[in-house]
Length: 225
Image 1: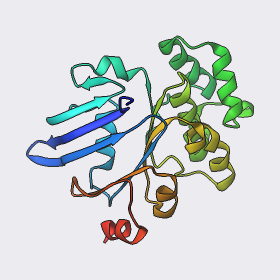
Image 2: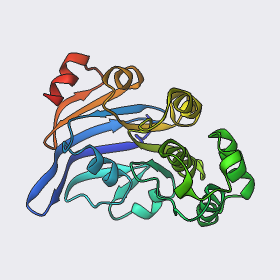
Image 3: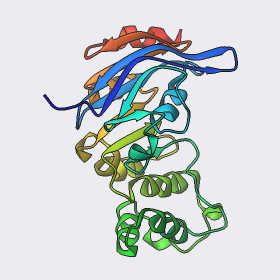
C-alpha cells in the first residue's frame, strides 16, 4: 500500500493559550483532494500553514510527503506549492522578475518562468510592476510562483478568490483536480468543494466536526451557522 502524502494524527496547534487546532486526524493519498470547510477563525488557514511547514505543530503526529514535522520539514518544504491570501510577491518588481527570483531559489530555468506566465495569461503584463496589476492578476502571478518548481502537493487557500470566471477557468488545469496533483483545498464554495473532494474535513473552533470521504452539503453548511 502506498504511503499517504499527508498523514495527521491528533494534530494540535495553539496561539498562546488559545487552541487553534485540536485533535485533527486525516490521511490523503497521492493525487487526491482534501476539501477543508469552516467559518472564519475555524483553523483552516492555520492547518495549511502547518502543512506548509510555516507553523510548528504543538502535539500529535504530522507527516507530509514522507517527512515528519517539524523535525524533517526541510525534506518537504521544497516540494510544496502554497497559494494563499498573500501572493508573496515584491510589489515593485514585475511578474517576470518576481518569478525569476523564485526560480533561482529553486534552480528552475527561465524558460519555465515564461511558460507559466503564458499559462496564466500574463505574458503581455509580465514587465509591469506588480503594484500596477489588478487583484486577480496578482492572484494569477501567485499561482505561477507556487507552481514554478512543479510541486507534487498544492495547498490552496481560496484559490479562486478575486478571479473572474475566465481567469478561474484559465487556472483550472494548473490548480484544479485535473492537474493530477495532491491538493488541500480550503474553500467556502460548498458545492464545488464537495464535487472536487476525495476527503472532507469540516472544522469548528479548531475541532473536526466532519471528516472522512463522505459529507453532504447540508452538514457542511451548518458549520457556518
